[in-house]
Amino acid sequence: MRSKAVVGNWKLNGSLATNEALLEALLREIPRQAATACAVCVPSPYLAQARALLDGSGIAWGAQDLSRYEKGAYTGEVSGPMLADLGCRYVLVGHSERRSIFGESDALVAEKYAAARRSGLTPVFCVGETLEEREQGRTEAVLARQVDALLHNGGAKQLDGGIVAYEPVWAIGTGKTASSAQADEAQAFIRGRIAGKDAAIAAALTILYGGSVKASNAAELFAMPNVDGGLVGGASLVAEEFVAIWRAADARR
Ligand code: PGA
Image (tube, rainbow, N blue to C red):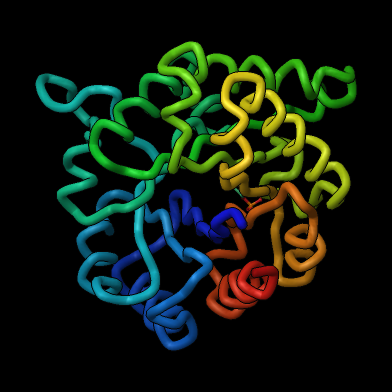
């Protein structure tokens, strides 16, 4: 049985006041001994707040990006050791917004993944195709390129204990969710690609689906054999939605 997880990605949203209200609402609903992991990836300035509120709870916290560097003259960067120091368990790596808006290459994403592992964090490695790529029938080629970049830079072993998130770019923040069959097909492909290097690691790997996951579609997505939970953007900012999504994943155990 693979570990399941529901991870919220707050993106560039929040304030001390709204974060507190949201986290307090989550704390009332997510049990301390949750078997299905529950986590929020918050903007870095709010990590200390997340730690203060969530420490000892069933909700873990993490960041949305990290530097490939550990320390030094790299103005504006936040390193893996700093995130670990703030008690982060998770860090998103290679989110499509980092790739497309901030120009992160497959090679840089692979370096960041390795940096996260070196700091003892659980990286959530994000991959996914654009609408144009899907329409051109290039979905598998794109996923293969993104996954292979990671495999080339450190091998399949580094995926042991990591998490992959399949997020078709056309489904992110658009309200347009991939069908459960589309999600499962892509995620089976990703698992197969990794199995080509290490079957045991691929079989045990937690692969999340992300892209307009909501309380109303979560159960159907999480029922698919290759979907081990969700990476949730917009709906993670609404406590009732996020809790319902987490419950839908937890019900699949
Ligand atoms: P969304 O975002 O749930 O708002 O589509 C998902 C993500 O970008 O991780």
